[in-house]
Length: 83
Image (cartoon, rainbow, N blue to C red; front, top):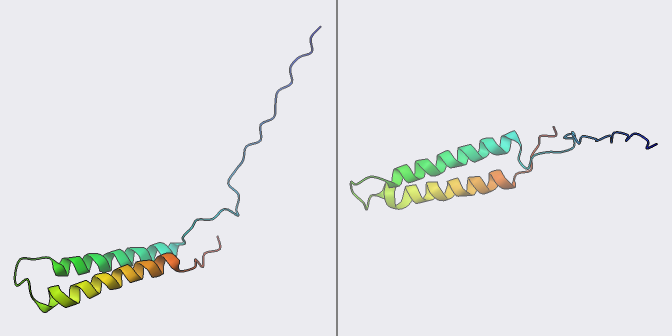
C-alpha cells in the first residue's frame, strides 16, 4: 500500500527589521523644499513683462541653480533614521 503524502511546510519570508529605505524622512523633506525653491525660481522667470529685467535675467536663474544644489544635498545627505 502507498504511504500518504506529507504536506510540505512553506516558510513565509517576512520583511526583517534590518531592511531600510534609501532615504530617510528628513531627506524627503529636504527634497520637497528643494523642489519648492526650483518652482519659485521658474515662477520668477515667467511672465511677459520686461523680459530683460534683473529678476528674470539674474535672480531667478540663481534661485533655480540653488534649488538644484539643494536637491543634490538632499540626495547625498546620509540618513540619520536608524529605524
